[in-house]
Length: 466
Image (cartoon, rainbow, N blue to C red; front, side, top):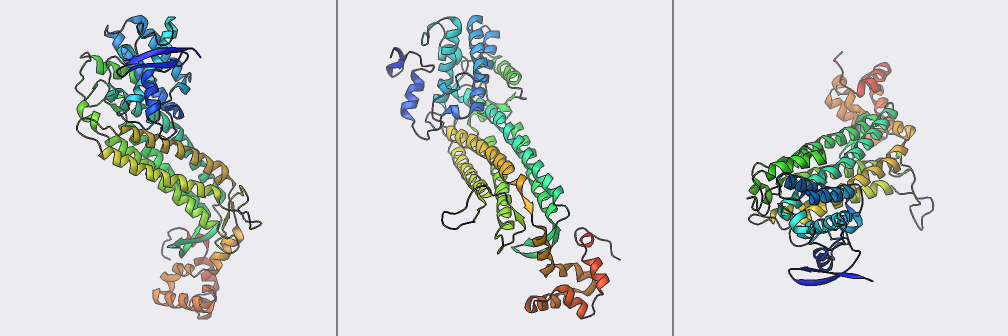
């Protein structure tokens, strides 16, 4: 195998001649074998890194700080990366020491070597175009990395929002399908008052739709970046016009309304937007898990539990119990939710651990946010396609629960009084008789009156007093 020698602060290192990254990336690979999850696992983040480097090169070119032929080669390299080329060369583990320096240098070195190819030079010929002096010009990891995170999170949120919207639409479709299925509502796992299965699924859809709005809201916070602040936000080693120009180019390249932070020193050390973003992901996870829990309860049994819905059978449920089918898709959604909730705690602790002008724990924040986004998107898609679409209502079981329930007595309270209703409910519970039988037997209401008061039209929405 042919090799090339590269040099850095710590000395020389031999690399395979065809390797797109360089010495600093290789040192990071050797140092941080932690999660087994490299940058290449998250293409949106790679694309965001390339966008930041392209914006910086464009600004440096316009300000006369970067030779036009170098800028053109860097821009071409960045465009190839955003088109999907060489993502596999982003090999650094997401969790790393150095506040993201290894990720930044992985991007600088790959872009430099790809640009060198454009200029007709071999990889590692950095005298013609250098990872630090050219690709990283007017930047520090401390502004380029968090800016790429802000852009990458917005890009990675788009498929999650699409997955939520599709899941919401599937729940709405079930709401329409089950609009006429009368069933018992329950509070604290006890019979409450009647509702329709359609109302239950409509509520699931509405609660997820709220989180689409919240994700859009928090993405707007991520549009404020510290690009141009360099090491600690003072803008050392930059042209006075660089920050505004680079941010303007980044907005054009990314298609996001990126703006400079009002105070670059504050923006370089503060992780508040990431904490809020993580909180929205946790909120979504909690809601998805609650829906999954409800579906497991509604489908439980099926003969000795609620048994009001049938989930689509996905796989045999037991190696010993023939015929058993488990709610494996909702169970998997639950587990994704628990992981996302745990990720949120890690993000919170990492954000709190920042010291003075920088937060060295930002790679952990990035790792957890990107993982949460990816897992939630996959969970929403799985939930929709392998569970929600195939749910069937057991209409007879739903009606039987209503017929046997004592909860329908609530609809009679305005007509027979709370005391009578409580007494009838207790009798029904102990005797096994139905509410209808007892009310008619005592002459409190006629059969015709009960037919009206216990009709779905009367029980499922507010009614004017007769």
